[in-house]
Image (cartoon, rainbow, N blue to C red; front, top):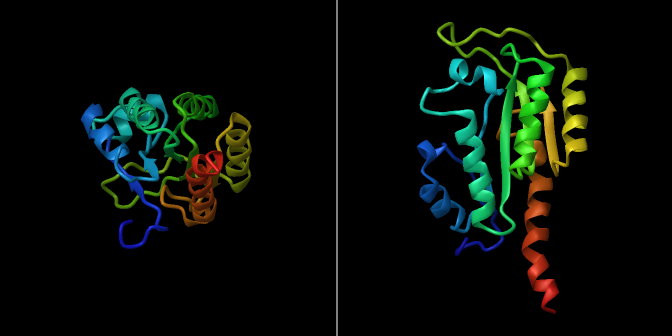
Length: 176
């Protein structure tokens, strides 16, 4: 950012094993978007994620990043097709909004190797559209939802860039 002031920085983080001081250090840097993926619904956490990670811990990390820096944009992601129910996905989305997450991506889980979890369901494009609309109704600033969407999904880049620039320009325009 020193060499190119217009550059935006998004960091996809671990949960730092719940170390909120580490979250604070990163959030207080010149970071524009703090991304941490919740990955799946509450009931599937132990099956899908490393046992050192957890649903509540991820929510706490996202909430803390938001609290640390005024205007911090937070982002998370959920993989679908692992056996989650619609009610569980709704609750995960509600929980993410409750801690202030701004941007959500939802994508199809794809089994990378035979050693990984198997796909339980291939989610239809219409269902991904439903999740996009549901997320927007909850107040997410941006929802990318589709079979090939990943947490690094590029379709939202322009939106994120504009959102960050608008938030950065508000204090300057208020003092003019």
